[in-house]
Amino acid sequence: MVNIIRIKNKIKNFKKKIYIDGDKSLSIRWALMASQAIGTSKAFNLLRSEDVLNTLNCLKKLGIEINLNKKFCKITGKGLNNFNQKKNLKLNAGNSGTLGRLILGMLAGYSKKTKLSGDKSLSKRDFSRVTRPLQEFGVKFFPKNKSSLPIYFQGTKFLRPIKYFENKGSAQCKSSVMLAALNSPGKTIIKAKKSRNHTELLFKYLKIPIKILKKKNFDLIEIYGKKNYMAFNYNIPSDISSSAFFIVLTILSKNSHLIIKNININPSRTGSIKILNKMGAKIKFKNIKYYKGEKVADIYVKSAKSLKGINSPKKLNSSAIDEFLILFLAAAKAKGVSYFNNISELNKKESPRLKLGSKILNMIGIKNKLTDNSIKIYGQPNLILKKKYEVKNFLKDHRIFMMCAIAALSLGGNWKIHNSDCAKTSFPSFLKIVKKLGGKIS
Image 1: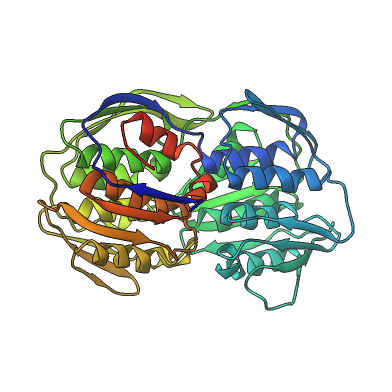
Image 2: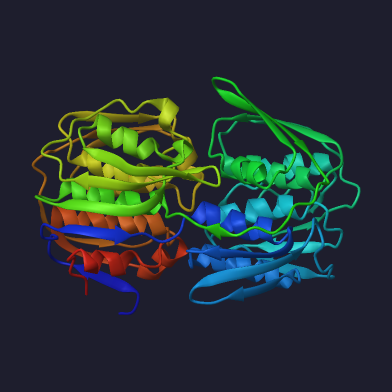
């Protein structure tokens, strides 16, 4: 049957050097920012995932000139809010919450009524967390109180700056407001719980007027809008969230060693590495450098002789939010109990990841205790799987799919995993790299 993979054997030991696809967060942000710059911007190592391709398709519908080839992507912008204003425009964000939420902010000054839709999974996610602050700018949404896609919106050329408190630790919500502020006159003030800061770093690099005051638990961000910026080139570093799957595969495999080149190790993204090292892994960053404000390094990882259960620090949650599923798998092989708390945000992702993660652990015989906000995982260091396992009905969540593939490769068993195409959402070369490391997939 098409779109199903089978894994029947654990991966053998490997010693390899690999390159991971471009960072998804940076790829989407580069495209959106380049579309509003003055002149032609060029990106190398742009992620060619469905989320990024949907971003480019939306920009083309807005009249932006885009040239995508095997080596690079070129985007020609004409300045802030210089989009081709069309009536009854329909934009599709596919599976991407980043695209869906950020493009609403970017189009806050787009005065034609527009429809934004997404796939089945994205249509279940909460968009009120961005529609509420965008309404304060002056954006109208139809129906007025609808909190999910599809939704109609109409921006205004007379945006007003706002004061906004982002208390979820969501970089998507913060960035949506930042993009709206970019097109608003005067000063927008954002008090934001700590989260990824890629948008702030891009604003700084592009010399957009921004002030950031870092407090212990939140940042105060001031943005002065209506300031055009020039086109820029970007060699996008590789994605640490995608790397995490192969980091855990290496840790759980015997006598293996892996080097992953040129990874974005922005401190707001490295929570998973800190958690794994606390569990007893030996992951190191080498050849560290800074590129356009982002911290970049090669990651060195080798097999772990043993892992220990931990009480995962809540302060690392926002910087590990996309990696918790694969961390659960590491906890399944750890000695003792691992406790992850304050992670209800997982159930607001592409699928209810906290619930499905618990379900998969149960399937492979790992005892766990689940609440709406936490999970306790009772590890089995000697866990070896020998049964047949079938995984389906997971809302085609790319990270659920990859978690299960890594479970099969590292723990054994005879696996049948549906919807393999969903990896293309964030990591098109995932299965190709698995095969390069020696994994056998049919």
